[in-house]
Image 1 (cartoon, rainbow, N blue to C red):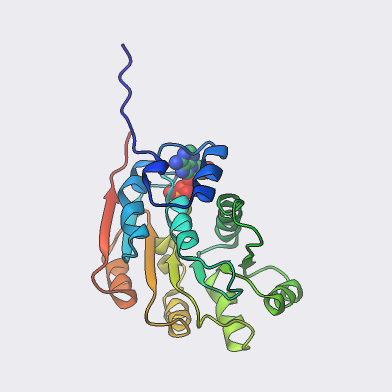
Image 2: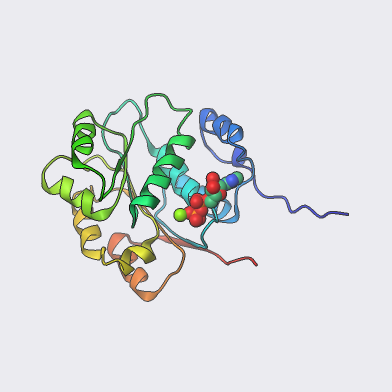
Length: 216
Ligand code: ADP
Ligand code: MG
Protein backbone atom coordinates (compact mmCIF):
# COMPACT_ATOMS: atom_id res chain seq x y z
CA UNK A 1 0.00 0.00 0.00
CA UNK A 2 1.27 3.45 -0.83
CA UNK A 3 0.79 6.02 1.88
CA UNK A 4 0.07 9.43 0.41
CA UNK A 5 0.50 12.31 2.78
CA UNK A 6 -2.16 14.85 1.96
CA UNK A 7 -0.81 18.36 1.47
CA UNK A 8 -3.11 21.37 1.82
CA UNK A 9 -4.48 22.60 -1.49
CA UNK A 10 -4.21 26.16 -2.85
CA UNK A 11 -8.01 26.09 -3.11
CA UNK A 12 -8.18 26.22 0.70
CA UNK A 13 -6.75 29.76 0.57
CA UNK A 14 -8.67 33.01 0.22
CA UNK A 15 -7.32 33.69 -3.27
CA UNK A 16 -9.41 34.97 -6.17
CA UNK A 17 -10.93 32.36 -8.46
CA UNK A 18 -8.88 33.76 -11.33
CA UNK A 19 -5.63 33.12 -9.45
CA UNK A 20 -6.81 29.67 -8.29
CA UNK A 21 -7.84 28.61 -11.81
CA UNK A 22 -4.50 29.75 -13.15
CA UNK A 23 -2.63 27.79 -10.45
CA UNK A 24 -4.52 24.67 -11.51
CA UNK A 25 -3.64 25.27 -15.16
CA UNK A 26 0.04 25.59 -14.13
CA UNK A 27 -0.19 22.23 -12.36
CA UNK A 28 0.05 23.78 -8.91
CA UNK A 29 -2.64 22.07 -6.85
CA UNK A 30 -1.04 21.11 -3.54
CA UNK A 31 1.08 23.62 -1.67
CA UNK A 32 4.67 22.86 -0.76
CA UNK A 33 5.41 22.82 2.95
CA UNK A 34 6.73 26.37 3.13
CA UNK A 35 3.77 27.62 1.08
CA UNK A 36 1.32 25.85 3.38
CA UNK A 37 2.96 27.35 6.44
CA UNK A 38 3.46 30.89 5.14
CA UNK A 39 0.58 31.65 2.75
CA UNK A 40 -2.23 31.86 5.34
CA UNK A 41 -0.11 34.38 7.31
CA UNK A 42 0.95 36.27 4.17
CA UNK A 43 -2.64 36.55 2.92
CA UNK A 44 -3.65 37.81 6.37
CA UNK A 45 -1.28 40.73 5.79
CA UNK A 46 1.37 39.78 8.34
CA UNK A 47 5.07 40.54 8.11
CA UNK A 48 6.93 37.31 7.66
CA UNK A 49 10.37 35.72 7.64
CA UNK A 50 10.41 32.47 5.68
CA UNK A 51 13.38 30.16 5.89
CA UNK A 52 13.57 27.12 3.66
CA UNK A 53 16.01 25.37 1.39
CA UNK A 54 16.40 26.10 -2.31
CA UNK A 55 13.61 24.64 -4.41
CA UNK A 56 11.03 24.67 -1.64
CA UNK A 57 8.68 27.03 -3.49
CA UNK A 58 9.40 30.34 -1.79
CA UNK A 59 8.85 32.38 -4.97
CA UNK A 60 5.20 31.40 -5.36
CA UNK A 61 4.64 32.03 -1.63
CA UNK A 62 5.61 35.71 -1.78
CA UNK A 63 4.34 36.21 -5.34
CA UNK A 64 0.82 35.10 -4.46
CA UNK A 65 1.00 37.43 -1.46
CA UNK A 66 1.89 40.49 -3.49
CA UNK A 67 -0.65 39.61 -6.20
CA UNK A 68 -3.30 39.32 -3.49
CA UNK A 69 -2.49 42.89 -2.35
CA UNK A 70 -2.47 44.34 -5.86
CA UNK A 71 -4.99 46.75 -7.31
CA UNK A 72 -4.50 46.32 -11.06
CA UNK A 73 -6.64 49.38 -11.84
CA UNK A 74 -4.08 51.56 -10.10
CA UNK A 75 -1.11 51.77 -12.47
CA UNK A 76 1.57 52.49 -9.85
CA UNK A 77 4.36 50.35 -8.40
CA UNK A 78 2.65 48.51 -5.53
CA UNK A 79 5.10 45.67 -4.96
CA UNK A 80 8.88 45.62 -4.91
CA UNK A 81 10.94 42.41 -4.94
CA UNK A 82 14.66 42.80 -4.34
CA UNK A 83 16.94 39.92 -5.36
CA UNK A 84 20.72 39.52 -5.11
CA UNK A 85 21.47 38.74 -8.76
CA UNK A 86 20.14 39.50 -12.20
CA UNK A 87 19.52 35.81 -12.89
CA UNK A 88 17.40 35.41 -9.77
CA UNK A 89 15.49 38.61 -10.44
CA UNK A 90 14.74 37.47 -14.00
CA UNK A 91 13.55 34.06 -12.71
CA UNK A 92 11.29 35.72 -10.14
CA UNK A 93 9.85 38.08 -12.77
CA UNK A 94 9.07 35.09 -15.02
CA UNK A 95 7.36 33.24 -12.13
CA UNK A 96 5.28 36.29 -11.16
CA UNK A 97 4.18 36.78 -14.79
CA UNK A 98 3.15 33.09 -14.92
CA UNK A 99 1.18 33.34 -11.68
CA UNK A 100 -0.37 36.65 -12.78
CA UNK A 101 -1.50 35.39 -16.20
CA UNK A 102 -5.09 35.41 -14.98
CA UNK A 103 -4.95 39.13 -14.20
CA UNK A 104 -5.28 41.21 -17.34
CA UNK A 105 -2.96 44.10 -18.15
CA UNK A 106 -0.62 43.50 -15.28
CA UNK A 107 2.85 44.94 -15.78
CA UNK A 108 5.88 43.32 -14.12
CA UNK A 109 9.13 45.19 -14.69
CA UNK A 110 12.62 43.76 -14.12
CA UNK A 111 15.25 46.34 -13.18
CA UNK A 112 18.59 44.55 -13.06
CA UNK A 113 22.18 45.67 -13.08
CA UNK A 114 24.15 44.63 -16.15
CA UNK A 115 21.13 45.21 -18.42
CA UNK A 116 21.06 48.27 -20.72
CA UNK A 117 19.63 51.43 -19.16
CA UNK A 118 17.67 52.71 -22.15
CA UNK A 119 14.88 50.11 -22.21
CA UNK A 120 14.53 50.30 -18.41
CA UNK A 121 14.13 54.07 -18.54
CA UNK A 122 11.51 53.69 -21.30
CA UNK A 123 9.62 51.07 -19.30
CA UNK A 124 9.70 53.23 -16.18
CA UNK A 125 8.20 56.12 -18.12
CA UNK A 126 5.40 53.79 -19.18
CA UNK A 127 4.82 52.51 -15.61
CA UNK A 128 4.45 49.17 -13.81
CA UNK A 129 2.53 47.43 -11.03
CA UNK A 130 5.39 45.26 -9.79
CA UNK A 131 9.14 45.86 -9.87
CA UNK A 132 11.65 43.03 -9.45
CA UNK A 133 15.30 43.94 -9.44
CA UNK A 134 18.76 44.07 -7.97
CA UNK A 135 19.62 46.62 -5.25
CA UNK A 136 22.20 48.75 -7.10
CA UNK A 137 20.05 49.33 -10.17
CA UNK A 138 16.89 50.04 -8.17
CA UNK A 139 18.85 52.56 -6.09
CA UNK A 140 20.19 54.22 -9.23
CA UNK A 141 16.71 54.69 -10.70
CA UNK A 142 15.53 56.08 -7.37
CA UNK A 143 18.46 58.52 -7.22
CA UNK A 144 17.68 59.79 -10.71
CA UNK A 145 14.01 60.22 -9.80
CA UNK A 146 12.80 57.73 -12.41
CA UNK A 147 11.17 55.32 -9.98
CA UNK A 148 8.61 56.09 -7.29
CA UNK A 149 8.00 53.60 -4.49
CA UNK A 150 5.50 55.82 -2.68
CA UNK A 151 2.63 53.39 -3.28
CA UNK A 152 4.45 50.16 -2.45
CA UNK A 153 2.29 47.99 -0.19
CA UNK A 154 4.42 44.82 -0.35
CA UNK A 155 8.20 44.74 0.07
CA UNK A 156 9.98 41.42 -0.57
CA UNK A 157 13.59 40.61 0.16
CA UNK A 158 14.45 37.34 -1.58
CA UNK A 159 17.58 35.31 -0.78
CA UNK A 160 18.39 37.71 2.03
CA UNK A 161 21.45 35.72 3.12
CA UNK A 162 23.06 36.04 -0.30
CA UNK A 163 22.13 39.70 -0.36
CA UNK A 164 24.21 40.34 2.78
CA UNK A 165 27.10 38.22 1.50
CA UNK A 166 27.19 40.44 -1.56
CA UNK A 167 27.33 43.64 0.52
CA UNK A 168 23.86 45.00 -0.33
CA UNK A 169 22.84 45.97 3.21
CA UNK A 170 23.22 49.74 2.74
CA UNK A 171 21.47 49.66 -0.63
CA UNK A 172 18.52 47.79 0.91
CA UNK A 173 18.26 50.34 3.72
CA UNK A 174 18.38 53.19 1.19
CA UNK A 175 15.62 51.57 -0.92
CA UNK A 176 13.44 51.15 2.16
CA UNK A 177 13.63 54.86 2.89
CA UNK A 178 11.75 55.41 -0.37
CA UNK A 179 8.90 53.04 0.62
CA UNK A 180 5.94 53.95 2.82
CA UNK A 181 6.42 52.88 6.43
CA UNK A 182 3.01 51.18 6.35
CA UNK A 183 3.62 48.16 4.14
CA UNK A 184 3.78 44.37 4.32
CA UNK A 185 7.33 42.96 4.53
CA UNK A 186 8.28 39.47 3.42
CA UNK A 187 11.84 38.23 3.88
CA UNK A 188 12.97 34.90 2.48
CA UNK A 189 16.27 33.20 3.04
CA UNK A 190 17.81 29.73 2.84
CA UNK A 191 19.78 30.33 6.06
CA UNK A 192 19.19 32.57 9.06
CA UNK A 193 22.48 33.79 10.57
CA UNK A 194 22.48 36.60 13.21
CA UNK A 195 23.15 39.27 10.58
CA UNK A 196 19.89 38.43 8.83
CA UNK A 197 18.07 38.64 12.12
CA UNK A 198 19.49 42.16 12.60
CA UNK A 199 18.49 43.19 9.09
CA UNK A 200 15.01 41.74 9.64
CA UNK A 201 14.67 43.84 12.79
CA UNK A 202 15.59 46.93 10.80
CA UNK A 203 12.95 46.16 8.17
CA UNK A 204 10.05 45.04 10.37
CA UNK A 205 8.78 44.55 13.88
CA UNK A 206 6.77 41.60 15.18
CA UNK A 207 7.32 39.45 12.10
CA UNK A 208 6.20 35.84 12.17
CA UNK A 209 9.00 33.39 11.47
CA UNK A 210 8.47 30.14 9.60
CA UNK A 211 11.25 27.60 9.23
CA UNK A 212 10.91 24.56 7.06
CA UNK A 213 13.66 22.06 7.74
CA UNK A 214 15.50 20.45 4.88
CA UNK A 215 14.11 17.06 3.92
CA UNK A 216 16.53 14.41 2.74
P1 ADP B 1 12.91 28.48 -3.92
O1 ADP B 1 12.77 29.94 -4.18
O2 ADP B 1 12.37 28.08 -2.58
O3 ADP B 1 14.32 28.01 -4.14
P2 ADP B 1 11.22 28.15 -6.22
O4 ADP B 1 10.20 29.10 -5.78
O5 ADP B 1 12.16 28.60 -7.29
O6 ADP B 1 12.06 27.65 -4.97
O7 ADP B 1 10.45 26.82 -6.68
C1 ADP B 1 11.10 25.69 -7.24
C2 ADP B 1 10.27 25.07 -8.34
O8 ADP B 1 9.07 24.50 -7.83
C3 ADP B 1 9.84 26.05 -9.42
O9 ADP B 1 10.12 25.48 -10.67
C4 ADP B 1 8.34 26.20 -9.22
O10 ADP B 1 7.70 26.43 -10.46
C5 ADP B 1 7.94 24.90 -8.60
N1 ADP B 1 6.79 24.99 -7.66
C6 ADP B 1 6.68 25.87 -6.63
N2 ADP B 1 5.56 25.63 -5.94
C7 ADP B 1 4.92 24.60 -6.52
C8 ADP B 1 3.70 23.87 -6.25
N3 ADP B 1 2.93 24.19 -5.21
N4 ADP B 1 3.37 22.87 -7.07
C9 ADP B 1 4.16 22.54 -8.10
N5 ADP B 1 5.33 23.15 -8.41
C10 ADP B 1 5.72 24.17 -7.63
MG1 MG C 1 14.08 31.49 -4.43
